Length: 247
Figure 1: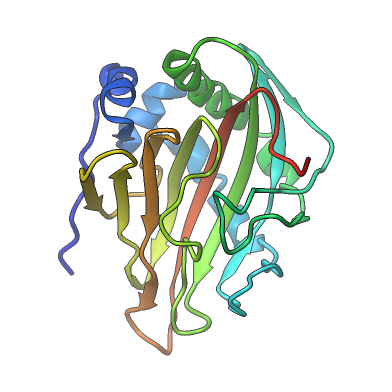
Figure 2: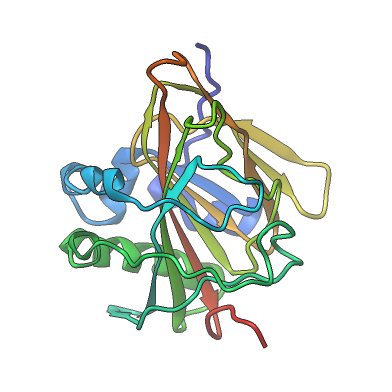
């Protein structure tokens, strides 16, 4: 299959790219540099945790293709503090399909949340949010996802092209096996500009200024219907002022 590779941004240029274009993509080597690691081996050790994600029971399209967990943190400079389990909530203005309801997902696996590389990753992306806006306390929601082909097709973004109602969105590819599709599309919210590409290499990281761009990922299908396939990602959202919740 011929897949359109993402436009890679050098680590030194990430903050400028976010300010100027509203998006940036880091290669795995760039992610390693961002988290002050020699390579991605610490991240590799976390990959098996995606095999233990519970089903998402809130899918309003009746699908069985999504598994996930959810965790929340407050990141302030070097401080990373987990917060008690809380519902994931989005207004319908940002998620017409699943907005307006409290979704109580199972918490993050302790082996993920307690890993030393986890705090470094949250702080590294926090620094990008602070460079984009200003240094401040950030309210972070973490979502490990598996989209599979149980139903013959899996939808990474069943709500379609959307914003998340936060300041910065980070989407990291963890694994991709036995599937076609899954093309990422990023659109400027205020102009006709857009681009498309496919996240292929594990630990490639896409950063989005949620106030400036809209994003979606196209459905996946199995290369072999009998064998099936899946696409694993980690989504982190950074929001100033507090977590989203019903008022």
